[in-house]
Length: 113
Length: 252
Image (tube, rainbow over the protein chains, first blue to last red):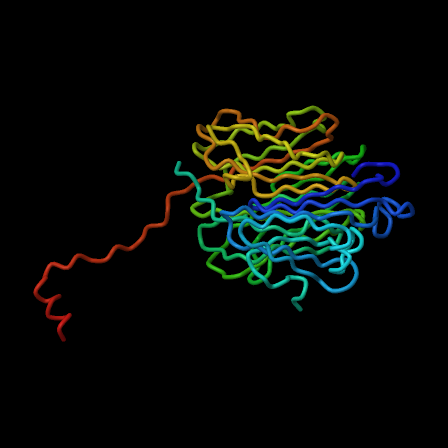
């Protein structure tokens, strides 16, 4: 956990079994590291990649607000979602990516009782 | 010793502070070892986690941990369980008992069959933070042909996109060959990577595991040996000596 103020740019990646979800956000200028939601800010882009030789995978996001969401990653999927595209799908800041898991199942684990 | 058989890996989310956390579902069978390595974005005095699972309880044994509570650093720890019998669709769980409730953490659960973690196998941990690439750890397996499961966590949240794992006995974990199990980074929190060596070769000789990365890392590593055992005997069909009787049976 880097110390000091939140970074101006927050970059992240999850890589599981060849599937990669890469995200970029900026800092909202007010959130504080290690307090509450921590360093938060508007999402700038999310890129999701599933190699062509992989079966279909599912990226599940629980998010801190709103409904859990699932992204279907078919073989060969490689798409970068821009800020407007993310906004249209309910992703606004980096807390919407929280609890990210990649599975073989379309069932979002966050929706289980 | 025979090499243990890697079956699969199952992980929790890495990008929340939520506790407890669960892995995706997996099966376990008699003769399996479930080994788990967790990473927390920062160390804290009296940091403590407990492994568990859904379904019939396995007995989780904490194996080794690396933490430096007097300085800012990550916390990384390994544990294992040996099922007493077959169970279907369990999830591994990890619960934070004490520690900063705002810290992100996560774990990978890896399953081996024909394996053992009891008695003589080795574990290793960083004794000081590794601050220069390659970020590595030495482990000396006790048995021949064991697997090594290791994890790396970086307090600096370095970008390991161009990482290269150390080679052990001809095996170099990569994303493509499936020996790297997971990689996570968030530049405001931490970086972590999990991988295994399927056959570390001769026991009694030191092996070096780890990854390259950018300068300025602040990493801790843990590694555990997964020993192999002989595969369980399988029953083969009895030979049929009376071919005529068998043919008659087909035409009944």
